[in-house]
Length: 389
Image (cartoon, rainbow, N blue to C red; front, side, top):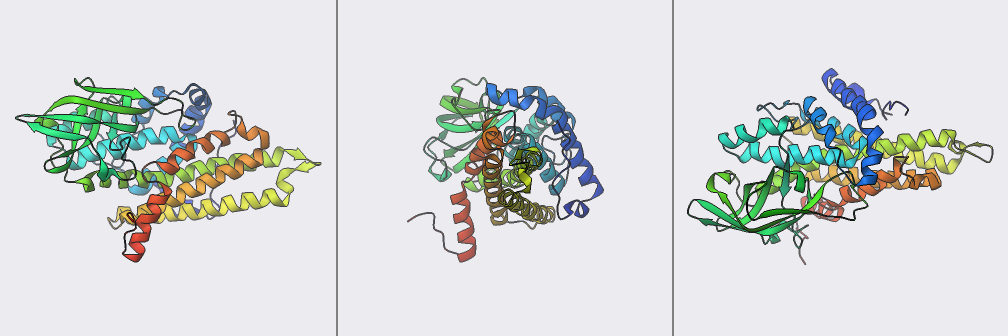
């Protein structure tokens, strides 16, 4: 397997700090040596590579941008570069790290009690405990405000009834960050694995994100103690703030997927001989490569500025929406073009293109579909919401 040298036509590396470049290169090398040799097997088998979790924890990749509790405390750009390199390996791997850190550790860090933080965050940073994020429901995806899951207070306990769907890490999680309606509005809860009335069931038959665990969560008169509520959660805005953190990582990760596809298509085009010369020498193929390179470069620059704004505390959810929307659109089109360039080989899993093509369909859809992010941006531009008729 050839060494990945990166895609950096505009020398974006020169805009990074030495520490950021070191972090990127370290994860890049680790992905090359530890992820790519095994990911084909896991994608075929529909299994998540749990054997990689201790290694990622050892490198400080879990909750990498959080402060304290054994977390690395990295800046937003360094964190983004980690997401970029992980998704260059596989979207399922980046999804695991993103859910663990941005959707599980972040809400405990932001909304939890000191006791909750001490109990969960160090163990999650070490990869000893795994989390999942229970917001989406079978009938409430793009409109989370339509959730039906309810939590009712009974003396010193909460009783929760409902179901969540399409939950990454669901059946392997030790704790679910679960969102439910209460008399006080939507609140966040910690629901631990093994709690009576709480069960999980994996979604089967996926052609996308096969190297990832995706589950349904079912709660039937599930009782949890009062101390398992995240006390600082207040309404849907708390859940959406977690999604903003995760969407930021997706913006970077999607460009990593596009980089993987572009690199493989370029190398293939240089060696595939048709009509007596490499297909890289034909105008139509060069046009595809040029389009991919241009969009990847623009995405890299957008993400870098997004990260710098985040580091200054100046980023807005609308800007993150643009980053997520752009990255996914670029990665989706790059995967299609790369598949075309590889011809029949593009549907074989010994090459990366087909796997990224399948995976990006999930990434394009989850944590806000392209249409939803378009409407978010449309409201930001015009001041007029278009979510309802």
